[in-house]
Image (tube, rainbow, N blue to C red; front, side, top):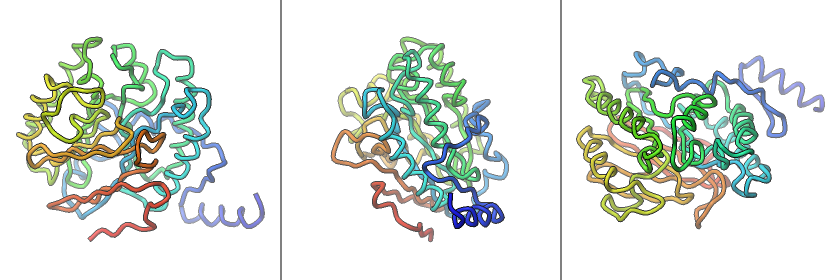
Length: 316
């Protein structure tokens, strides 16, 4: 580092602003990745966050999927893309950041898994400590047919696989969608999640939330709520009753990834928002992220490539 950089570091430290260049390794704060615990998210105070204060925005990412570009042979492309995303996050200072699954490309039973987890945690540790980072499990994180063992491996690195939390008067639910996609390896885990979800949505305080959001990895559907089963959606046998449950609870929006492209649909008044990848694209949508503005009676959201993320976010 040159003298000017050293001066800048001193100034930033005095201001209490974290600074870490994209080339410097971050010290992994393991506590940051264990905030999802006891079916809640510890970074948010469940009492004070239940009350609406003012409009805010958060940022949704999906599918960093470390190792996908090279078939698990290297991580350089993912590191570069996440470095760009982190710079945008630290500049814009969202209320929180949520990553909707496939944090790694290797699954827990593959040799490169631990190295990819380590790189993910190192790169995402560069997000300013004041910005909570919420992680959601995807099919690569626990396998296409999750088991108690694969879920436990994920829990060791990233905490609970499903949980809920309040932010600014908004109730947020994170689900393990791999159990919804194929529960055959752990049917009891799906039943536990379903029973928990029912209790959450029936809580009297939740009924008073300004909005209810659901976050998961697999979209329940891409465009039509009754579309045929395919790789990228949840089978109708479990999709249909879950959609009915979420509609009855007045869920405002569902946010997902998995598709490596953007998609949008509605089930009644409820939006199904599928966000393109911050990692490797599989369609015309470039690597990017979604910015979601939350107002008292409505939400607005837009996907931005990493090259076109706005300099500032206006919140009315």
